[in-house]
Image (cartoon, rainbow, N blue to C red):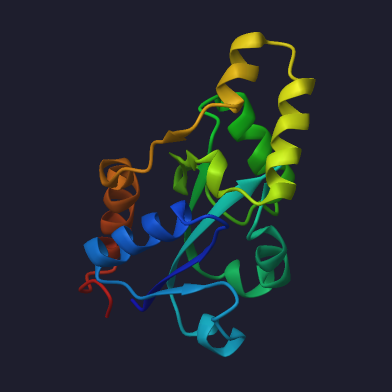
Length: 175
């Protein structure tokens, strides 16, 4: 089974998870912009990774553009976001992933990072506006606090599911 990790992020957390997964599974990784459509067709297992920006998966348009090819593949999706709320997760998937494209058992939410000083001025303004619109004072405060929850141990479930899909095909990783 030929495998690849395709990701799209903004500030490095998604790339970090993709690199750790690539090392653990011996699978190459590419950004969504780097992978040609012809290369996509030769892969059987595709691990997609995406950051969430204002409720939108950054890889969303790419998934829609390639949905015809992706429907015939085994796909895992890891989503890097700040929310740990399952209702938020459900909404993100509903609004961003074409229906029937990915088995819900193959979707994983991984915690991200927020370092205010690394944000662009536009993103900092958007975050502050978003925080002002949140009614819950604890949630508002949380949106304005730096955090870095990107840790290698967060990818365990993604590795486990990937290994089970690869083992089901009886082939070595990265083959």
